[in-house]
Amino acid sequence: MKENLMEIEKTLKSALAIALLAWVAVPAFAQDTPVGLWKTIDDDGKTVKTLIRISESAGVISGTIEKLLDPKAATVCAKCTDERKDKAVVGMMIIRGIKRNAEDVTLWDGGEVLDPENGATYRLRLRPADGGKKLEVRGYIGVPMLGRSQTWVRAE
Image (cartoon, rainbow, N blue to C red):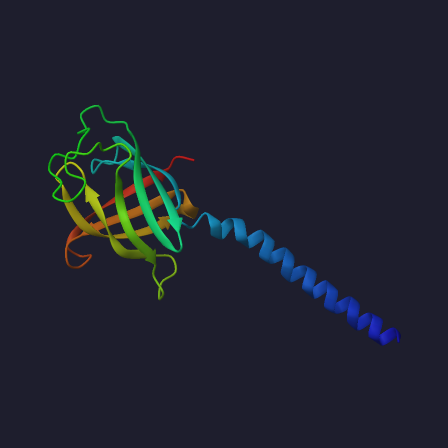
């Protein structure tokens, strides 16, 4: 009987330790997601251009321009060639169809990003960095090697 109680106590302690580790790990993992509000930084690495709200629905990531911070930025997408042509940039969905990569769970890809300045769409890869404080954004044509990268900073 005493042995059974000791075994139960040992099992409970193990379960409690596992639950505690899982509870501590979840907030850290939650920051390694592109979901949230991001400041886009221009290619010069200094100029904050927009605030982008990235959200997730049924495992698919999308991103919408929430605010323009660059006074020189276009307010409508005059060069867009799809249904976004001549629409207001604020409120426009510019990131579509991104999903977590099955082989590399730190990477989101498979969708596209629109550059409202030139109306072009590019394939897109997103990778949270620096514990989720930054987002590595790579837009490209064809293969990731043929593109450009920006680092966005979490705004919230």
